Length: 333
Image (cartoon, rainbow, N blue to C red):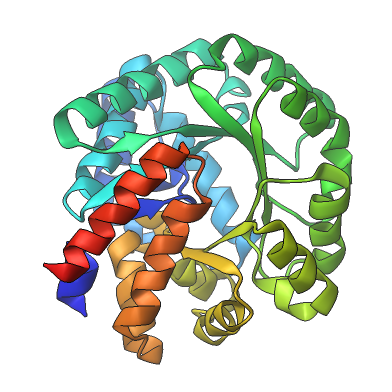
């Protein structure tokens, strides 16, 4: 199974670039930018990790962003992630970035997007990893701020394939951002939203994603199993669900393997992803291996999950067919 996971070409649809910020890189960038984070070494940063729910994780996540200051910092962050996953035979990624986490501390939008984009181009040319970028709005900030950042993104529409919604979900329903997402769709962006595991009013939030926002995909989405009507809607729309097993284990103390199997039994297009791998200590292949270790997922199940990611990606039909053929070739080799 380890060999199969390594050999198959893979796609990742739910990874936050800021969540790939490894401790040694946090420390190095803080040092070179003269930012005092209060840690004497990368080991001290790791020792401070104490995540037991979403808010406790987010508090550290945003603090570490202070080390990111220049266009080169964002390039280095992004390219380091691509190098890591290229070694795992990840060939396609739709990564998230959170511009409000940077503009709110005085970093220009242009600085962020130009550094990321330059790394994407280099990763495709040098590493063979293709990517399409998704800009996320922070749901615990105002809808007005989200709209302002949507306007900042419009000149870069060729660099950003879609928009999403992440951060603290409590009391921040999708409806809060309905006008923003309506405008985003009018501008040609694809739409996705986080529906984190076991959050307050999560079933209602998922219905809003489908009925009010009309998303093209749902991030996480495990709680679709709580309502047969949700299962029916998601299946009829053929929407992808980007589940993150190791991340779930940190947030709800479960890899949600039983739920993933239930979703597959309902023929939902569930995919496996790493979310914030530097903080949770597990990149994409590690998440697949967790399914095998925790619940004895079979080769057929793993292959289906990998195929699902390409099928529900925002690649062109031609590119999807290309990557799916690579999977077929790998299986028949």
